[in-house]
Length: 216
Image 1 (cartoon, rainbow, N blue to C red):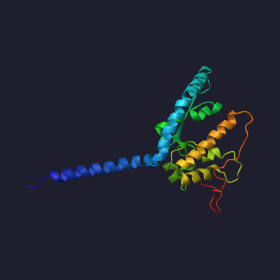
Image 2 (cartoon, rainbow, N blue to C red; image 1 turned 135 degrees about the vertical axis):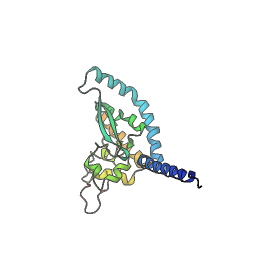
Image 3 (tube, rainbow, N blue to C red; image 1 turned 135 degrees about the horizontal axis):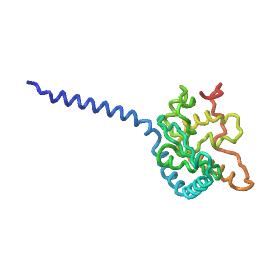
């Protein structure tokens, strides 16, 4: 009489393989991105969070005491890496860019990167269009980004969608550091009285391919 053990073991192994494959498929988008970029997010993000936490906490307390409409924190759903939806918490103030700094816990947790495309609402056409879907899902949205630091340059080709695509095609630690430095300079220009404005030098080239006027 032939034993049924080998066939049962094979069936269990096949089922385990299928489950592992499905799990890997779900986890793969979250693992996208270089280790160096994620290390930069963790190290620099945690350091900035430690420095900004007292000011953010004080501002949140003031907004709570003043009974700001909607509360001290704004909560909105956003699509993250791999299309995963998370709730983005932002302090309801623009003073000293505390609204941006209040998002640093999301960087440490991995919902956001320090640098990346702007976080979009779930179902936004910019993340579901046929040409944008792949790279939008493969990048974490950012605390700041190329589109944000170039928004005031006045150059005609600095369309946010084009800049986000340009970043997606060239992202790396060096570009991230350049964007963060530019964002810090913008913050200082805003905070200091009568600042001396300088021209941005991240990239003054036209990012559009020949004959292209925009991105879906």
